[in-house]
Length: 477
Image (tube, rainbow, N blue to C red; front, side, top):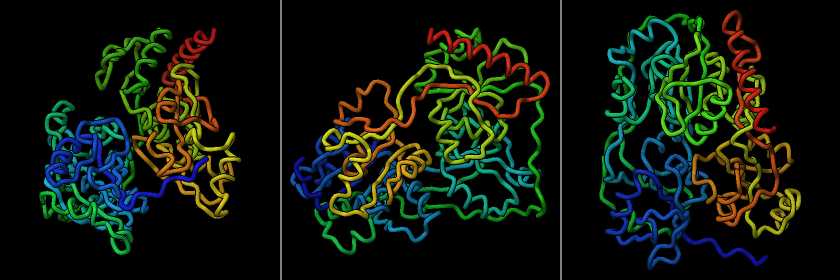
């Protein structure tokens, strides 16, 4: 294998998603033309016209502050909320905010059903808050001096949680989407535009002018903003006890996204029909013809924690997400109840095709051939599972990089290993990658608390699990 090419002098992280089109237009006007970025190319890396020393890499917005903080990228552009989310927890991190950019203003808001009063909630008991922004949310709630609250950290779509599974959601404001969910804005938590950020050490020690000069010429956005400073509530202090869950119905969570199609088929084979939950559409709360059964659609990543909290009695998710939950919380009461044996794919360690190694042991030896103490970077959406894998495979010094998307682009430049799932291997092959070590074969499954519900709820859970188990066995027949 030939020696890797020298790293470009300046590495810049740019966002995909909603910011991309407007940012690309402004970059071109500033003379910073990332070839293919404006066209929405699905590539992950771009050269910059006339600036051979600069490399652009595209990330999910929330990953960019982490990449810049780690020093893997010298400069980055993302929404201010994701920058402040990281800096709220790591106040002295190596991120330097450089410039607010004119790419629109985003408000992070607290929402609830119309008429929600935060002071009344705080006085009545434990306030349940669903959010993708746990650090900004905790800061806001602490500034309000709410005596007791529970943060429900979710992977997205926090607005789907109130009112039955959360009292509030903290999320980016989208008036039409909130109205569709029957929610309204209660308070503003954070305000900001996009932001240019830099790595503190790179700014101090390296010549970044080839990228920094044009990026600093981009139009200025909102100068103030940031996290709100709410007036503390006048709420009596004292012990707040979360109300125990009392219900007569069995609550079932079913997934959205790519797992939905397989789940619809599994339910149909089990004789379970949910009105409003079809392969090509779903409503948030489908109805079931089975007496005593209520249903809600959730992200599959959020289901194990929701079951552990007692919010759902039964959930249909992936075995990979159950494994990730148990890696983070080994004493969790959540267990697999039935293997649905659908949506099958392998989860494992992914490396470049060019790596001269036949197994993970040879790969570790290759990476450390010149430096026995070199840390091995492991990137994954399954951060806890990646950490467990690194310890189990005895990687020695390692660093887990949590990511939220665009995963195939992380190796080899930004991580040695990607912990990723693959159904057919097509995407891996297209990116010159392969799975060198399989962690598990994942399918979708039914999960629940290890302690069976009492009475009719328990009997109904037994019946549904038995039906799903038989339907799964038919797949293998």
